[in-house]
Image (cartoon, rainbow, N blue to C red):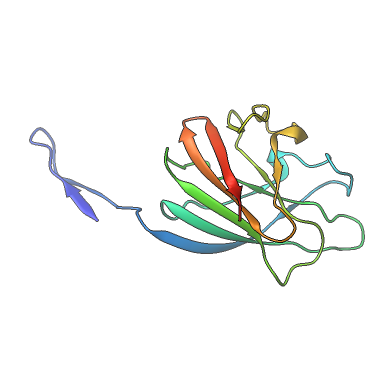
Length: 144
């Protein structure tokens, strides 16, 4: 925590979000099991806890709908890193990670919230790391 003192206004506190956190989320389900049926507005958001967030996405298969989605933090700052992994205890397919509407991942199209081609699938045996490099662009650093 840092206290910022501006001589023209009252002091205010800014919380330092440096560090690493591990969080778990349940992926958002799609309307069908068809590849490409999911999009960013279906995705559950990943919370921004600190500068580096490691996310374990829980997936499941209910007999019909098994594509699950996660959305990168909407309040991320330039330089933030998000690592996404499928939770080892999960069943079903690997999660698909989407940017927020108005953002993109690498050379994928800008997300409108309803276009399925804006997402990136997490590799089967590992994860994927994203870094926010501008106000509207995430770059995949690579699979891990």
